[in-house]
Length: 547
Image (cartoon, rainbow, N blue to C red; front, side):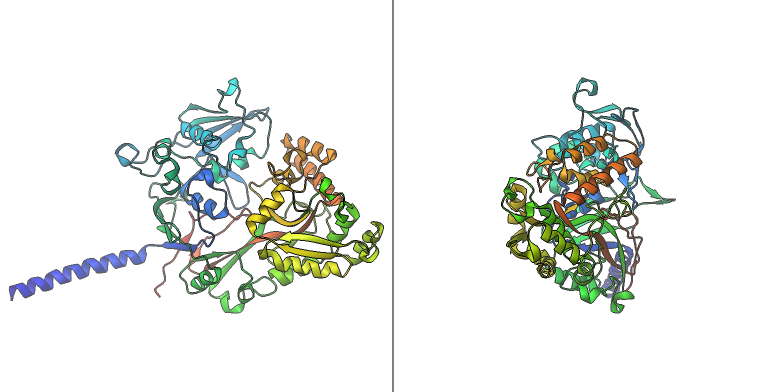
């Protein structure tokens, strides 16, 4: 009898413990999303793709950060000064920022972040042995004797100075990029290349587990330094990332509630989710929240402008302008993208970028009559003698290309669409072997210089982003004036003049300015984005709902 009582008491004890554990698990908030493209590295030095950037942003911090309005705000640095000649930036660091716990620290406890950590982190980005794709950020660093031959100087534990060779107004924005996150030397040197899957930062979440291609888990950093009022961030207990490659399957998992968040909209299910005016269909309106805003991304057709065009009708500016007038961007966005995005009827600089002004920069609009008149002026009345023009693209954008093919045929321009794999397409465009190609440009930082750099003659591909090989002394002169202009209004004026010049010469056919479209369940609160499409989870709240 005593054995039976003891057994019952033991069972009751374990049941009570199990019940308590289940209760605790039910109160834990785990934010789940899918990354179909995969993640290649958790090392900030390789935060090039959107997928890597999103993950790195949860684990690491930089000197500064951007808010949802793309304004530079303090982060590890709580204040800074810029010298009168705009060549020396002095940052004052917080005294309460700590790296995550790691075995490489004394007693395994994360140590304080100091100015020398940024000297190490920035120097690592430009180290040729590291081969970071973000090394270009520091191309303007002054490595002369006055800066100690590094360009980065720790005056003391909380004071960092950065020296530039020449003024560059967007520099603070550049420092907000995830490449510029602070990393601890001890941990990086210990793991070497394996730091990619053993990351240690100072961000709102800590690395927990990564089974590549299956699951990636971050957990709350209880020692994080940022607060929301009186509440220490982050609110979430964990972030779990899955890697389902098939986007249709991932969408179904989102609908079932197994993912909290979905970004972007695929053609396979866009009509199921969105109405033609770009709002949520009624069947999902009570289940999801949709958040959309301008995204700093311009989709365009590029035209090779160098000697390879000698025998091409695209050599004629009138033909290039005719193509720009020859299709209906508004209809293209409505029918093929459910009005997610804005027709590019202004310049190359996208809607949402500081300095964008559609009243000052007038682009192209749909005008078959103007297109036909320009073709006649170029010697191709009604397209006679023009021949077939080949446009290279990838299968992802075939519908857009076919739309333009159909509309341009009505004015006498015959397009032949050649579909290539993404890798072959990118290489062909970079080498300058494509005379007419589809491409897009997404901002790295919120300054229009990032877009206009595509037309600066010293940035010719493949070393730079000038894929069209556009060359103009007038453009270059304005570009160089703007690069050192610290007054925003004056700099924006230079940008608008350059944009007008691009529209006039037509080395590109702007298609549309993109927009973000993110979807999340109703129990998720305060999930926003910015025009750079950055995923920031530190202020997100998730309310657990019993299923």
